[in-house]
Image 1 (cartoon, rainbow, N blue to C red):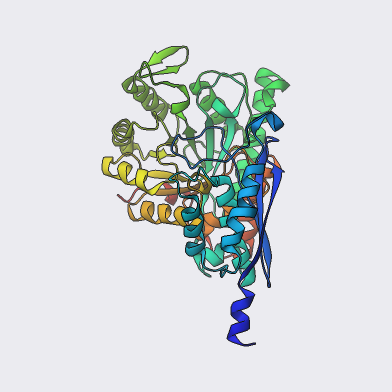
Image 2: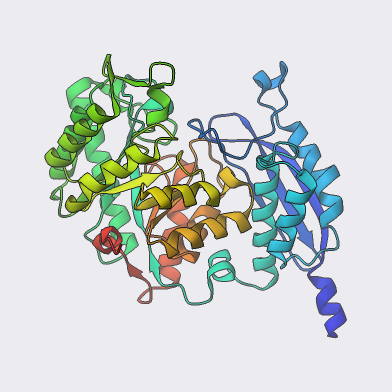
Length: 436
């Protein structure tokens, strides 16, 4: 085959979009990109708890589907994005992503919609990978993957993800003592089911109803109680908290911060940043909590930094999600303040794969721990798993080991682990080692 024909085979021939349902039954965008050789698709997730500097989803408004419709985003893809992509080499990811950003012309992708651009961007990468007969993780990260990440499993939900009184959004387990990701994952599953037994015995069957991310949403109020009952579930499974499992918290403190009073409304009273920091220290002293995500309001870089300094001797990682929203400029500010030692990576927060990669590379150079994450409103798309392997991430957050929209991600890592049996090492405790 001539080189001319080879080039033609990689040219984009069509870009189609469809309004589909996410895990909350709300509309989202699915995009399919085709070349002469291949076709693949990707869909955009959506968060309930969002940082205010995230790239903007394009929603229809009005009465249809309570305003959540995405027909405008579908139109963006098929009538604005598609014309500038057709004919481009599907392997030119950076060029394609830049073309979409230039077409949009805003800082937050509010014209085309970040839901339209991220679905298109990932679909381009998946189609390119298929064209080269490579899995996505090898296409992006190289043909020799290094390791599997630690699963941060959100087994107890609160905040914006549940209908209970817990202000903290996520309570996570990390199975660190294992030889492989596969072994670690199934240990996490055991604890998840033990937690169900404990909750049912303590509070009745209603306590085993689940939140947006598949974690249980029991009638608890105090995070201390949540950590205590998770600790019991770990012990009931025959494991040791602090040895076999570490714990993590996603506070999402912006959700209960009063910007007028500059106080946190938590446990029925108002708290200063200093008082809340002391509460976190109590939790760290009482439980094997090794990561705390978004412990303060999303613009309080110095509060993050002060807490990180206090808990670092205990090996605790302060993690920025709403603080950074996968944005390299915001990350720079956090690095200047030494606010965190870990970052959440959510591609839809920034709108393109290229900008996601730039953020990860910047964070890695600064010694930050990388946590590839799903969103609370998800689809069956599992590209987050491939990205976690491709970028040699330290952790993957994909919710509880329940609901197919969550397990699609974990199951994909299980597949990759099996495909590379004896080659990939599991990061385990090493993921928590601090090098800066």
